[in-house]
Length: 217
Image (cartoon, rainbow, N blue to C red; front, side, top):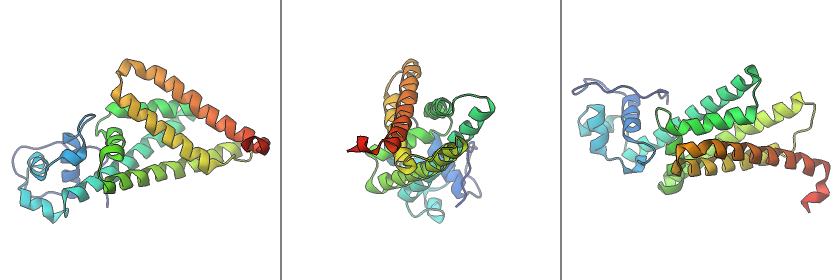
């Protein structure tokens, strides 16, 4: 299923035709840093999309199915944004870890509210929503694993437990992202500094364990 990457602007009045992307965009306009997608009603979504409630079922079986599509879109969009940040870091000769973390935290307030959706539905959503979020986290882990292997290769090193480190970093970043969502924005720079140090400690520790496996006992 193909979804638009940016919310579609609402037009006045009922629409003659509408797509799944229009309904997804309508849902994204209604959620926010403090509004869960699971709280949206069918009537709210269709009113925002400019269609009759019955027309909704031409595209989705339920609001839950729509929410799953929103979670999938949120995950794929965030992976693309953070991936682009890693490439920009190389071009700007800036630390990849810091650039990635800064970009991640910036997404708390970006259009579409993709990061808040993942953070909230992963905690307060239904079992199906939580499963969908965990699946998106696994995709983050897979991409980060590939990046860690590529970085180690460029440095002429053997990657140290890349899949396990990718999992640890992903879980750390999302947990601290949830903290950032609840704290004043002026505290984010300190949080970013802490996240960067923690990630580097994880990577450095993995390399030390590789060199000295007895330390793991």
